[in-house]
Structures are given as C-alpha cells and as structure tokens.
Amino acid sequence: KIDGVKIIDLPKNLDRRGNLSVIEEFKNIPFKIERTYWIYDVPGGEVRGGHAYKRNQEFIVALSGSFDVILDNGMERETFSLNRSYYGLYVPNGIWRQMQNFSTNSLALILASIPFDVTDYVYDYELFKKTLHEKVNNL
Ligand code: TYD
Image (cartoon, rainbow, N blue to C red):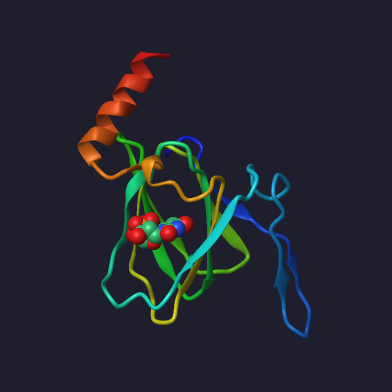
C-alpha cells in the first residue's frame, strides 16, 4: 500500500428528490483548494497523467462514469477504480499518477492544492525515482 494515499468517503444527503454530496477544504480533504479542473470527453483507450507533482496534492472524484487511477511511489504500484460521486481519492504530492479506462461520458473532477505551475511537474519517471531516492536518503 502506498503511504498517504486514501479513499475518502464524502457526506451523502440521500433524498428522493436526488442525492447531494459535498467537499469542504480541511474538513473532508486535508488541504486548501487553490484550483479545480475536470477531465471529460476522453476518447476510448486514452491515458491521462503520466507524471508526478513535487508539491501539488490532489483529490480526484468520478462525478460521472468510471476510470482507473494508477499510483506509484517508485516502489509500489496501486490501482484505484473510481465510479461513484460520493467518494474520492486523495493523492499526496510526490506520487506518480496515471488515469485510464475512462468510460463513455465519464467526468473526473480534480481539486488541487496549488495554482497551475508547470515547474511543479515531474515528467521523467527515472528522474522521479531518483529524486525520491535522494529524499529518502536525506531523511
Ligand atoms: P496535464 O496536466 O498535462 O493533463 P493530464 O495530466 O491529465 O494528462 O494538462 C493538460 C494541459 O492543460 C496542459 O497543456 C496544461 C493545461 N493545464 C492548465 O492550463 N491548467 C491546469 O490546471 C491543468 C491541470 C492543466
């Protein structure tokens, strides 16, 4: 299991008029929300992500449909299938992530802890593993 990663159940207001779920920063997720983006209209078979963030933490919810999130901390790999809008996946910084198997009309909502910053991305998997190794050695 990858340290720090977790599925978080969200409050569910069940109602015959329709259900309602909610996310509040620091209450349901452990960071301040600085940015929100969503991924939609993903063609069948496409893969998103394929990078890590140095500082950014994220919370991913399948608002509609389903998809898989594959996480990798350089040593272990774990796959999470998201398919309900009343829970999400918390991904700490420093974890390699990939998203795939998007169903037709799926909608991925992502809450992020920092504004968009290209320099926060690590696109090179070998570099990712190397910096991780250095981090561990510096502890
Ligand atoms: P990217 O993070 O590479 O997408 P994914 O990880 O899902 O494959 O982002 C795709 C493009 O969108 C890229 O050109 C950067 C841009 N982008 C923003 O401008 N702001 C954002 O908050 C995000 C997440 C992406």
